[in-house]
Structure formats: structure tokens, C-alpha cells
Image 1 (cartoon, protein in one colour):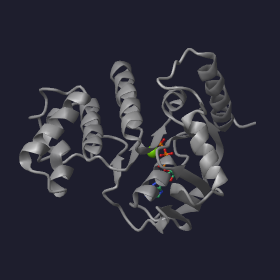
Image 2: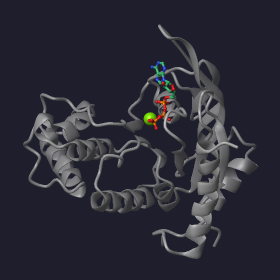
Image 3: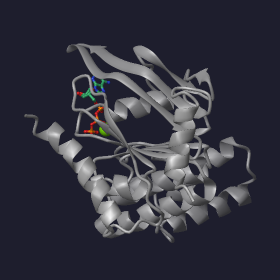
Length: 274
Ligand SMILES: Nc1ncnc2c1ncn2[C@@H]1O[C@H](COP(=O)(O)OP(=O)(O)OP(=O)(O)O)[C@@H](O)[C@H]1O
Ligand SMILES: [Mg+2]
């Protein structure tokens, strides 16, 4: 059987790149910030199409423009060049079909408990209270915070707040998950557990995921394709590496190591340019 990554890759390519079957299309996207410090070109010429059900990791050094790209797909920032399409229509702002896990852990509502933070989006969707609570409880357990639901954000550690954010995004059941270094603040054990859970949830639900990380091993473990960015200014896509390995991934296998080395060489060249 042809691995999923290759099938998706071939399908989008066969459809003619930026086009027909892709759920999200970034077409020659650029972003120049203009502020008191003058103009800064953060991102330049990024073209990438995400097929439905793909898991793409965006990997690059600090400041290369990863969050900028994600914020544009989320609709929080508008591109200053090129265009972003969702289901063929230009992205004009945020939408419920895109769930975002922000970098850092300060996006929770301070006045709501952990459980109510997770349940918040469900209220907007009109789910009855009992169902909201049950669903929020399920995702609270999933991120390993059973029994912590009554605490407010100020009473939670950084890693706990990060996990509440992840639970909130998953509970809302969006079609597309946009995750900005969601496991960055977690200890190695929790991180490994949540990587496995995310992989399982993705395999079950076939969501489309755009996932940002600095961590090459995490990218190779999770994704169907790794999109490697050049360093800024004007960060752009340097390579798109398909990861045609079966899930769950064996991080000690020759295949895994080979992809790891390939991606590592690309990143290393950005950190230590000739
Ligand atoms: N609102 C803004 N105004 C001006 N410049 C910005 C703004 N947001 C980001 N930048 C600049 O754009 C560049 C890319 O920032 P971005 O946050 O996208 O990087 P990143 O790849 O996510 O980095 P990290 O891995 O550290 O999170 C940086 O040089 C940053 O200073
Ligand atoms: Mg960032």
C-alpha cells in the first residue's frame, strides 16, 4: 500500500500544485511588518498547499517567520503579498473551522476555570451544558489534568496552561488545527505522551494539521511532510520533505534516522551558513 504521505503528496501535485484538491493554499505569500522600527520583511514567497488530512510541520530557526505564517493562515494577520485560500476562497479573518493553539500559554481566559476554558468554544456552538462539561472533562483527562479543572489559569503552571490550550482546541473539533509550538513548554514525558495522543487523534479524525516546532525529532515523528524554512529576514520555504513512514513511528528505525539526518542537514545549514 502506498503510504498516506505519498498518496496525499502525489494527489496535490497531480492536481497541479496550488489548486484543485488542496484545503489550504498559500500562494507566494509574503508579510512585511510596518511599525515604529520601520518596515521588516518577515516572510517572503511562501507557497504551500495542504491537502485535507495532511499533517505538515513547519520547522525553522527562531525568528524565521513560522508564527507569522500560522497567524496568516489563522486569519489574525493579512499577507502583504500573495494570497491564502481556504477551500478555494481567500482567508479574510479567523473562523471556527480553524482551531489555534498559540505559542506561549497566556491566551486562556483568566476569569474562567480550566474546565470552563476548554468548554468555552462549545458554548458558542450551542451545545447543552451537560454535554459541554462532559466533553471538556474528556479532553482535560486526555491532556493529563484530571482533577485540575476547577483551578483558574493563575493557579496553573506554564505547562498546565499549555495543555489546557491544547485541550480547548481539540474539544472544539475544528477541521484544521493550527498549532504553534504546542509542546514547547512541556517536560519530556508529558511531551512524548501528548505527541502520541495528537498522532492518535489525527489518525482517527483525519484533521488537517499545521504544526510549528523547532524540534526536528518531533517534526519527523508526527508529520506527513516537513516544511523547512530559511532564516529571516524574508524567511521562505527551503524544502518540503515527505515523511513516508508508518505510524506510530519508530524513532530508532533506519527510515526515521534517514529523514532526521536529511532535515537536520537543512536546518544546520541555516544556523551555520557557509
Ligand atoms: N507584529 C510584529 N511587528 C513587527 N515585527 C514582527 C511582528 N511579529 C513578528 N515580527 C518579526 O518577524 C520575524 C518573524 O517572527 P515570527 O514570530 O514569525 O518568528 P518565529 O519563526 O515564530 O520565531 P520563534 O521560533 O522564536 O517563535 C521576527 O524578526 C519578528 O521580530
Ligand atoms: Mg513563533
